[in-house]
Image: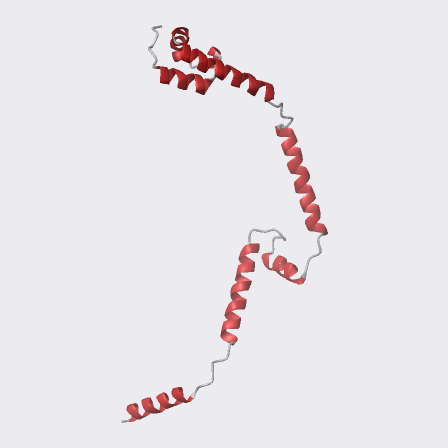
Length: 152
């Protein structure tokens, strides 16, 4: 394999991206980085700084005790707790009406549609139930004038 020539900026970028361990470097750049490190003191300083950073990261890394099984167990517990809370919660008249309206249970996908429809029906009912304002004298005089024009 031929050794590719690296610029100092590219070599620094590779070291900063992959760390100071040659095993982590991309295989196509590994030999070139080793040669560049041997001949450039600035790159050796950069590699030393990255080695310190790698060491600090390794010493501070935590071993997470989270696993897929623990996540699934927690999810099952929270779902069971939520279902228990929903069955134990007092249900009001409006909730019972919405449940009856949705047909398929308290938490159906149609619940939001039912609530929005009720709000719309209430708005339309209130809008239609508003009485028209009483006619004032201007409206009456305009009606009289238009009646004269039509009659003439």
